[in-house]
Image 1: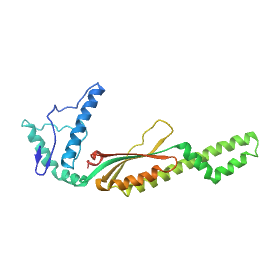
Image 2: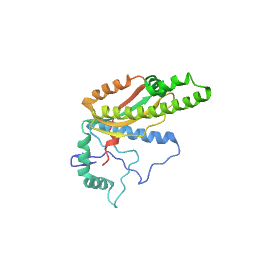
Image 3: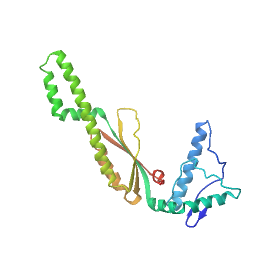
Image 4: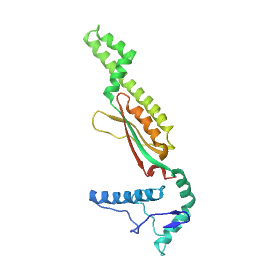
Length: 225
């Protein structure tokens, strides 16, 4: 459905959310939506992808096409601004993980305070040793938190210099020995995405750290506003 120099890809449906108790049906709807977004992105190069189940409600008794055209007219200036924001760009997901046991060993090996406490345990009675061990664990937890905050700031700034826009997402639980410490959605110029990739390779090579880098995707996280 065109309006001036923008258009929408739509289909006619009831003005109510899609609902099903069958997860396979819901998945098929979402995947069909994604295939349409991907096809439009490949065909025109720039899209403002709306989430699945986005519905424009009818405003009157006229043809549905007129409702869509009226919506495009009302939203035209904002749509044009957002189109220019994402033109030539794609969304990439960046997740940084660390292995707490590996990082804890490194901290314990390089912390003067922990080394001093460990040395004290060698010459103290059993009751005192227990208290010293508790203190070592407390110091290690504190230094782990400090290291996590420092890594978060460092990685965020290193990544930020290679992107046009960035969204901080909620970290997720993962199985195994890793923990997610950073979860980002990044809007990146497609021509320079390799620079971000090289930066992430440097983080991935750090002992006890790993990176998951996904994309390119249509810029779902950057079309609002």
